[in-house]
Every structure is written in structure tokens, then in C-alpha cells.
Image (cartoon, rainbow, N blue to C red; front, side):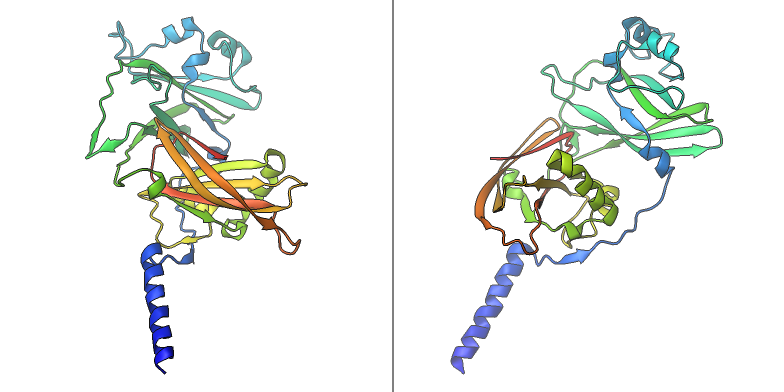
Amino acid sequence: MKKKFFIAVALITLTVILCFVTACEKLVDIEYDLQESGDKALKNAVILYDNAIQWLKVTYAFANRTKPLPETEDCPSEITNVINSKEEFDEAFNEFPVGIDFDKQTLVLYFYASDNIFSQNGKRLRYYELKDVTEENTSLTFDVTCVNTLLLIKDEPYADVSNPTQLCLAVLMPKTQVNDFKFNFDYKKYYIEWNGELKDNSTLYRADLEWLRDEYGKNIVSSIESDFIITDKIQTHEEYVTALKKFYDTFDIGNEMLVLFFLQHRDFDTNLYEYSIANIEYDNGYLDISLNQRFKGTHSGDGWDDIDFLIIRLPQLPAYNVNVKIL
């Protein structure tokens, strides 16, 4: 009787310890409570280029200067141009990263003056993300989020002493009947609320493809056949509920982010692997995650999935570029 009692006590103690270590995490269903706003179909067809000034002709950029650049007292604070033809494009651009079909597409340019996107050493200081697209009557509004990669401490940002420079957002979109375009800006702030190194404040999960939403999972499986490796980041509630239908109940999207990493084994690789975090480094928007890979055995052929799906959970960071590598 005493032996059973001590075993029961030991089991209870072990359970308490495990709950303490894992904060009693439970895998739960994620409610798809995404609020519909804007034109989702149009947003999915729109591509935002936030550093288009690099491709413009000098004469065209000079003709579209804005306040408060030097000698622009008589210039507006913002300029919006719409390019609908190859002739207009050739007057403005030396090059562009993709081909444009002006029978089906329109290029909207937004000029303004702001702090430089890049530092002197080429590191990205800030970047812009398209949050929403709203169409009303003959007006189209682009909601854009500006993410500052200079981390905030105690609500005070590190000093950014760069002089105002000319910037240009380029929006490539399908042709519409709209003739009025507007840009609204929101500025995203990040706070350092964790202590120590990133590695010590991050968790690696061996995930299951069943945790993914059906549409998102189909896109991953379809894409990884040619890419073999896919990395995605989740930093907003919209991204979270769109990608995942299951995750742990202690996750806080307001203070944490996720990196999803998919690795497909080659046909000749029948090994099973275990993974652990080797190191995580962050520098001005660039998040680099290194993983250890350890041989675990070989698959039996029953229920084996040739895609390794890992989730790295870490503090929210203004991550412009995320790279995961296997050591």
C-alpha cells in the first residue's frame, strides 16, 4: 500500500514539474475568427515594392521630389503617379524586377520623403508591408504598415539620425476602373520584454502537417515539391489563423512570433531526424536560425511523411528576412 502511495505521489510530482516546465501547454484548435475587411481578392493580386526608387531614371525621380527634401519648398509632400502603358513606363524606369502586361496590369507610384530604408552598411532599417486594400466607389486605398527594425526599449527608439531621403512605393496591381489612389500608413512598434539570448527564449516544436489549415497546407505541399525547403514567418493574427488550425494555448501573438520551416527529404533519403536549436541571431531585420540535425533511425514505410515540419517560437522581432539552415 505504501509503495502504491509513493508511486502516486511521484507521478503527481512529475506531472507538476512537467506542467511548470511547459507552462501546462495544451494543443488546442484555433478559432478562425478573422475579421473580413477590404478587398481580399484584390489584395492577393497586388504586389508592393517598397524601394522602387532604385529602378527609376534620375530625371523622373527628380521631377517627383517631395517635401522636406532640400530645395522643395514649392513641392508637395506626396505625389501619386499611375503608369498604364509601356511608353509611360519607359519614361520612368531603367528596369523593374518583373515583367508587366499593361493590357492587364497597372503600376501605381507613391513618392514621399522619409528616413532612409537602409543604413550606410546596407542593413535594412525599415520596411513596408501591404496590410489591406479597400475599394470604395472610384477610390482605392492601400493600408501600409511601416515596420521599424530598430528595436524599442522602454518606449524609446534608438536614435535614427539619417537625413530625409526620397522614397517611392510601387504597387503592381490588376487594371480597374479606379482613378483615385490613396495610401494610409500605420507604424508597428516592437518591445524587448525578454532577457538573455534569443536561443534561450525560443522553443522548437516538431509539428504535424495536420496542424495546418487545408488551403495553406495544400499550397505548402504543392510548393515544396520543387523548392524542397520552405520558410514562412507568422507575426500577425491574420497570418496565424490563416496558416494554423492547431497550436499551443499559451502562444501570445501580441508578444511572440512563429517561424514555420518545411524540409522535404530527397527520394534516396530514408532517414529519420531529430532537431534542436543551435543558435539564433538577429541584426537589423535579418533573423538567422541554425538547427542541429541528428540521425534518429530509418523509417519503416508505415505512416512515414517525407516532409519534416518544424515550428520555432520566439519573441516578436521586426524580421524582414528570415533564414533557417541545417548544420
